[in-house]
Length: 183
Image (cartoon, rainbow, N blue to C red; front, side, top):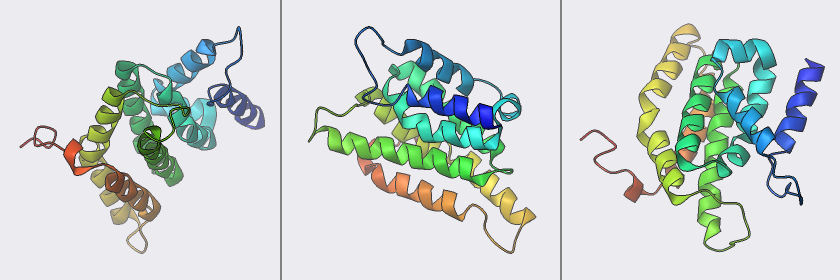
């Protein structure tokens, strides 16, 4: 696992903002990171473990900032599936997913003030906001409710719930349309 964690640190460090050099565009690292997100959660867990999945969620903003809209939407949904499926064993994976989304939403607010920052497309930002606000709500509630049935003495999802609520707070009411809420 030490080798796996080191390898993941190297992989994800190569997609960080500001890592671009002349003659090196990092597409191979971006492609490899994207491929990892598309693995079934069980296979990914065997390959990189819960700590590796948590690292992947931490790297999510850097990954999504560099993807086109359709690929970004797909990767975000894959990452949600990973965090949902692995959360019973490691709840921090889900918390890191929401912290990553919060980072993306916060950066969108800063983009208008500082054009030098990496940004995501407005279409991807809207898709991510709609996904967090309505697309994953039912699944998140089911996972959290299942956890409370198993361990009624404490909510192991308290940090995930808090992070999710912070994401919702960052999403403006104008992005939650009646169409996305199924009304």
